[in-house]
Length: 256
Ligand SMILES: *[C@@H]1O[C@H](CO)[C@@H](O)[C@H](O)[C@H]1NC(C)=O
Ligand SMILES: *[C@@H]1O[C@H](CO)[C@@H](O)[C@H](O)[C@H]1NC(C)=O
Image (cartoon, rainbow, N blue to C red; front, side, top):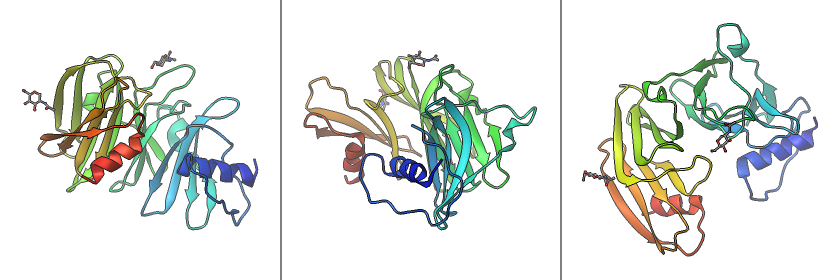
C-alpha cells in the first residue's frame, strides 16, 4: 500500500467526481488499501475523518481508519467489537453514516455485501473505540431505510424513509433524546428503491426535504419541505430541465 493510493482514495472519497490538485502526505506510514464505496464521516471539531469498510479488489471490508486532517496521517483503529459477546460488524460497502457531535460517535447504518443487505445501526465511540449495535424501537421492524441525522435545538433526530417493501410513503422522525417517534404521511403509495436517488431524503437546517425526481415526463417536480419540530410541510414545485442532480435540487431548496 503506497501513499499514492491513499491519496487517491482520499481525493475520491471527499471530493467525489471533481478533479482537484493533490498534495503529498508529509509523513510516510500506513494507509487504507484502495476501495470503492467506503463510509466516511468528518468530526468537524476533532478535525478527523473516519473511514469504514467498502469493497476492495478482493472483498468487502470492515476495517476502520481515522485520518488526522491537521497532521495528514492515517491511523488504523482496532475496535473492541471483535471481542466475544460484543457482536460483530460485518464487512460491507455503501453504508450511510453520521457523526453525533455531543457523544462523539461515528454511526453507520445499512449497506450491503455479497451475503446480506443490512438494516442495522452501529455507533463507534471515538473516545473508547468501541462499536455498539443500537436497537432503537423503530429499527425493530426489519425494513430498509434511508436515514438522515439532524441536530437541532438540543435535540437529535433520526429521520427515516422506509424503502423496498412498503407502499405508503411516510417519513418517521425519531427524537433520540426523548425517544418519541412521529410520522409524516405523504398520502401516496409507491415502492421506493433504496439504492437510487430518484426519491430522496435530505435535511437542510431544521427542514426535512423529501422529493421525487422520476423521469416521468413532467417538467415540474414537487419537493416537500417539512419542519422537524412541527412536522408541517410546505410543497415547492420547480422546473426541471431534463436531468438534474440531487445536490443541485437540495441547493435550490436551500436557497429558497
Ligand atoms: C439486496 O437488495 C437488492 C435489491 O435492492 C437485491 O437485488 C439483492 O439481491 C439483495 N442482496 C442480497 C444479498 O440479499
Ligand atoms: C396527508 O393528508 C393529511 C390528511 O388530509 C394531511 O393532514 C397531511 O398534511 C397530508 N400530508 C402531507 C405531507 O401533505
